[in-house]
Image 1 (spheres, rainbow, N blue to C red):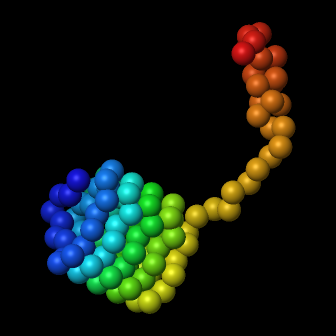
Image 2 (image 1 turned 45 degrees about the vertical axis):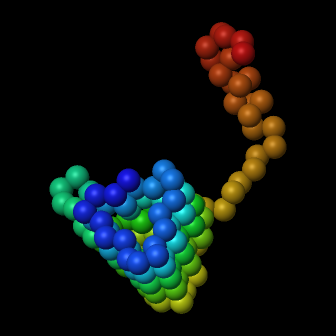
Image 3 (image 1 turned 180 degrees about the horizontal axis):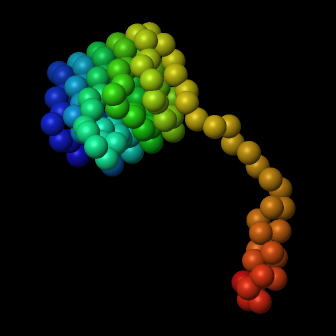
Length: 117
């Protein structure tokens, strides 16, 4: 879905993508599930994506923000500041796994609610 957005020649925006108030450069590739977060509750802001930039799937670009030409954004990133051309940016927390924590959560929930399951 696009709103007030211009896609340059050869640019691709995959399924489940929302691009609002954005300018997408030529041959840029926008991964599935990517969104431009262009509204903060008071005003709308623009996102600029340079030529041949690659935005990984499920990324959130929080406007106002500019992604330089040929930059690469890692999948799942939340980008809140400008990224220079030819840069790689990954903005996400590391995965943390807590073995056994799901069982402990369920046991605590069951104890607190008196329910099983």
